Length: 470
Ligand SMILES: Cc1cc2nc3c(=O)[nH]c(=O)nc-3n(C[C@H](O)[C@H](O)[C@H](O)COP(=O)(O)OP(=O)(O)OC[C@H]3O[C@@H](n4cnc5c(N)ncnc54)[C@H](O)[C@@H]3O)c2cc1C
Image (tube, rainbow, N blue to C red):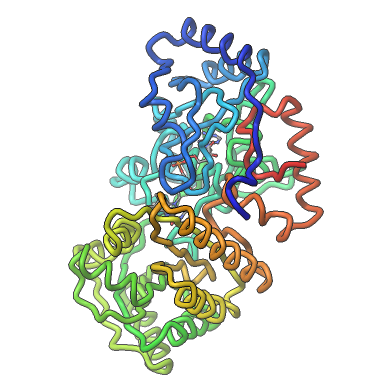
């Protein structure tokens, strides 16, 4: 599928002009229409072209979000929610123009309930802000995409990260949320109870909806106790297959690993140079264990034995916080280190996920495809979830390279789907993966469209995303 196949969204010039006037009057300086700020609020993270909105609003309250949505609904103008813009599939683009609703000023932590292990935040709070705020409570919020994303954006993309193998994704960690829907009304999808059988699960309908159903204005999140002990380290393997088999054995044995990340040899080369790591340039697993002192030592030893049985090692692990932090900083900087493999190139970051039993096969076939197609494309993976990322480095001014990269991504997505997996484990559909949704979900796409039409009949909430055109 080529980007030219993406859903076009017709511009409503008259409506846009009317809304620009209304919002300027309502929000004053908190409504901006300068070229630079509009471009910054479209897609900027990959080669997908930037499609800027016509104006950027900075609301501070749910009531202001309601006013913005009502103005847009009255004039049939697109509304695109914006967190920090770190999404990777064109999610924040405005193909038919419209208003970007930047939630960065809605950044209050509304409540922390240590006894209940939950908190309520506004959508513009970032994951790092929240964890800084929680530091003295002995609690933390575990979901950690590589970017310091907003919690609203993370819920909207159903994000995860390195800790998901132990703590789940945003799907498992949002207890309830409040959102402004397309008609300007608010909905609160639940209370703070840990579980509920009360009707349709509106929380999970909105989690992962990428701003196409409503704008999240607050979220109640589950928190975790900071573990008594944390140990972790890096283990090299002779091949990607050996590393993947060690992951499969670790998961299948039920070791409660908190993080288990695959880094292939090319990515390891980038990380060694960029993050000054002293490990061999071979496939490696970055691993972390949470628990009691005795528990983490036992888990590390068992993992070391599994690694050895699969030809890996030595597994050097540590409980020293500074050493662990350096390793995970390097892992979180993988995207930036990859870019140094081809200076001047831009990255196309894509992700797929397969059942863990097919993980080794999927990664190996993908590495073979990268070699056959002559691409420079390192791999990192949230291996415990069967989820991996490929960053294709390309010259965005060369249409042939773009076409080749898109062909590679299409083959990767179809490979994952054929293995009973998904074309995206955590980045979402946005614009970039629209063409693969029907291959994965078939008639499910029609049900999604019915829901979208019922809740947003004017198609103003982030139009042109997720659902394929008719
Ligand atoms: C270096 C790097 C590493 C990354 N690693 C990971 C990773 O490991 N795991 C992972 O899951 N992702 C990863 N990502 C992708 C990205 O960080 C996530 O998709 C993140 O959840 C996006 O949050 P954001 O605040 O940037 O949202 P944005 O990009 O601003 O928005 C994303 C989508 O959510 C919608 N949205 C934003 N706020 C709201 C709201 N309040 N209400 C309704 N809809 C809203 C937008 O309309 C858009 O469709 C990575 C990105 C980068 C650049």
